[in-house]
Length: 240
Image 1 (tube, rainbow, N blue to C red):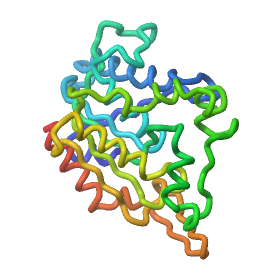
Image 2: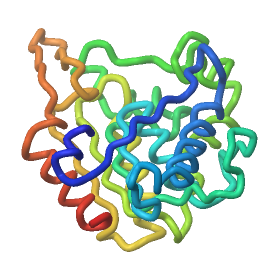
Image 3: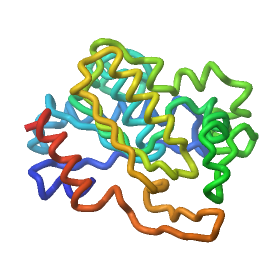
């Protein structure tokens, strides 16, 4: 994301409480509070408060997508974190391989056949999985929280443009998560405002892909010059 500095963008990194400190919806509350803080302090830092892109990967991708689909609403909004009367509306979202519907990830991995190809496929319906820790109890027991954390359940006709990218051999987050998000958004807004890119053979960001036959792929295809150009072409279209 810091490459944005070379393209005329200010880049703000947002911290948020992790599951060891606070459970859902603390993280998205923090992210939306950060957007409000940026808007209130925009003049001090010479920022344009009306042109904000959210860009996150993995868990950050979920938060970017969730903040984007609830943008300008009171959903996932904690007024006690400050600037309660300031809108958290943004302009566009870039979601890199973020989870959406936590409750169906095991099912999607099974249906995709990826377990027969790649080592290290995650299992989420356990008390120790990261979504279970995120929600404070076994994922299967809190479908209501899973729904609240799913960006697709908040999409309206006011949804902002999205660029969604995912690796086809991601062993942590099924690629179907991003496919379903893109499909859900295109049902509500113009199709040309939603771009889904599936990077063939790519894993979870820079996590190596290890096939069952022992073949190992390393690298970070999301950060290549070719792919970064796609990201900034998208951002420039809506921000500049």
